[in-house]
Amino acid sequence: MGFKCGIVGLPNVGKSTLFNALTRTAAAQAANFPFCTIEPNVGEVAVPDERLFRISEIAKSKEVIPTRLTFVDIAGLVKGASRGEGLGNQFLANIREVDAIAHVLRCFEDPDVTHVEGRVDPVADAEIIETELMLADLESVERRLNNLARKIRGGDKEAAQQDRLLRLAKVALDEGRPARTVEIAEDDEKAWTGLQLLTAKPVLYVCNVDEADAATGNEASRRVEAMAAEQGAAAVTISAAIEAEIAQLEDAERAEFLADLGLEEPGLDRMIRAGYALLGLRTYFTAGPKETRAWTIPAGALAPQAAGVIHGDFERGFIRAETVAYDDYVALGGEQAAKEAGRMRVEGKAYEVADGDVLHFLFNA
Image 1 (cartoon, rainbow, N blue to C red):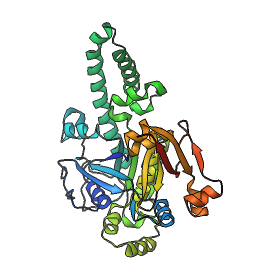
Image 2 (image 1 turned 90 degrees about the horizontal axis):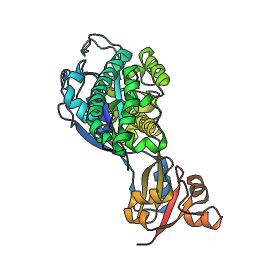
Image 3 (image 1 turned 135 degrees about the vertical axis):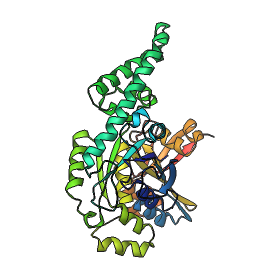
Image 4 (image 1 turned 180 degrees about the vertical axis):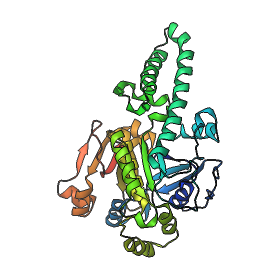
């Protein structure tokens, strides 16, 4: 399990350049004109995690398999998209299918790259897209409320729950607030997610700066960071131009290139960590002579659920999990040494898997 992140933004903010860099492909045509991305391009990248390689070295694994992250480059949106302007209808349909939104904002000045609104103002750009998504959600909510009336009269409990949740969303949207600001009870979370409201999806703001500001950001990116903090959203600063250059370099050259720019790591790494935190995701590992592998689970997942990510039979026939914390695994030199030192634990169905756990599952076939 990874997650699917939709890259959105106004035309000409660097979405496709960033997508190409992140996926190291030329699948998306990057060009200086609106709507150069007509169909949503999909690319998968390995999630970088140094722990995976440390564990594989100790386990002497033949193969290392990281977890994967899917990026979807979605056609540029313009004002009026909720009414079908530009490629609005397609944009809205594509965005419903992703787990989170990476909203790319232009935080650089360049007279050679046109801006669809005729100015560079990332906060205003963010407001344009947020407004269009809220308008689309409001229309959807009102339509669905009308359609649910008959089912509710017939005593349909699921319809009654949907009606209640949609009305909560409508209150927020009428007040100019996105649906993600609505507090939802734990028992309602599955039904709430099923509504697929555009503004209920978590947002990661990606500040696209020029190369000179990649390490420190600039005034525009700081305004975005302040906006994100107010919203409880996340923000990262990246130079899509630098990421495009990094994508073409070998590992040794990449490290030197980053050091020269005052950067410790590629923007991809920061985006993934921010995205994981935003969605509350965790990583656990399995290790052995054949392979060391990373697996992604939601925070709070219990051991049987974590086992089910590998195979449904592991969850259905779960007996117990043998687990070693990552720090103990590395410090002691592997599973057997951790066991001899009394640092391997046997956990049952109620165990909440911790980030970095090295796990071995026992189950009935």
